[in-house]
Amino acid sequence: MDGVRAHTKASASCGTCTPLVEKLMVLTLGDAFNPAAVVPMCPCTDLGHDEVRRLIVAKGLKTIPAVMQELQWKTSCGCAKCRPALNYYLVCDWPDIYADDYQSRFINERVHANIQKDGTYSVVPRMWGGMTNSKELRAIADVVDKFAIPAVKVTGGQRIDMLGIKKEDLPAVWADLGEAGFVSGQAYAKGLRTVKTCVGTDWCRFGTQDSTGLGIRIEKFMWGSWTPAKLKLGVSGCPRNCAEATCKDIGVICVDSGFEIHFAGAAGLDIKGTEILCNVKTEDETLEYIVALTQMYREQGRYLERIYKWAKRIGLDEIRNQIAGDETRRKAFFERFVFSQKFAQVDPWSERVSGKDKHEFIPMASLQLEAAE
Amino acid sequence: MNMVAQNIAARWVAVGTIDDVPLRGARCVKNGAMTIAIFRTSSNRIYALEDKCPHRHGPLSQGIVHDGCVTCPLHNWVISLETGRAQGADEGATLTFPVKLEGQVIYLDLGGV
Image (cartoon, chains in turn orange, green):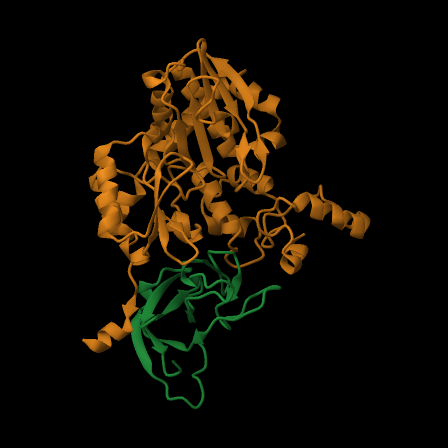
């Protein structure tokens, strides 16, 4: 498959044609090609993701070089496929011990902004549950003017994207946003992105629960967490579903009797309605179940595997049994997530405003300027 | 280190020290309109390439550095730090510049620019 990808570009970008390419390969190569065989993480190893994850825990491997040495990596320092995956697995498995290796992170996660086609970056601050106010909007307008930001866009996750920012300007942009109370929206992360909400019982004549408040509560609890792939949530205040919760990674539909928890939706490369996890009566339970489900996915998902693909692989009933049917297990998942958050909930923008990774944002030398002096 | 280009007088310019460049990372040197990326590999070798992928001009300095190569952050082309050439089935090359290390100081030869 890697050979076909390299030479034809088929299955090499978004990957949606992979099953078709596999069929072609079976047709052409016959038994010589087995699509069900364990796919190695990358050409640096013969091991698949699941085996690597299992061995990291079983052997207590706590650094990327230790993984590579113990599991007999074929290259000296991995590649752009395995390094970010290993870094995620180690962050997830040893949250209190592992020192995040930023040189093994894709640029967006390394500098906490989204790289664009011209090498500039975009910046998306968090707007909890999609709520904002005049003070925040004024602060954003001032930043846009001050740094001559060429484009401002409302995102699908109910917040505001500022596009076309020069890398050198990022810390100063974050400093101004930080003064207005903004933190990173992690719009670049394989991690918690947004919790989209509708206005719920605060305003809507059909609202059955405080969907906005619940969405904000979930987002404040879960922000900063790293996951195998991006994680987008939605909370709708009634089955009319204005927050489109039924195509999210995890969604909630509020009803008069409580909360219907959904998961494993997709509205990207694939389009797929969510599955129902279970119904619960209180906000507290909703939070606990969602957090436990997320932790199960964090521990078992393959790097870059969205939750709907993981759920299909593991089995919906298996997930329901572990989260909804087994209180001990659910509480253990929940506790492990909470522990991990102690180390993950640090605003990366304010850290960088304070000088962390300064080298990332300034050129090492500007030759013609020096000559002119 | 790369060979100094023939026929053109070398013009070595100090651009910083090896500690300025993260291990398995890169830093940029602005030279007028051109940006040159200085790479440091896991084995502490230094390379200099124009900060421009031959594919869609992505900034190579922002990519992941591994085994004498960098993976472009825009579309994952893998570029050799030694030759500037695209690896695998991709075709194209990025400009490389002679670079040398004297003690801790990195010198870049801009004689060919």
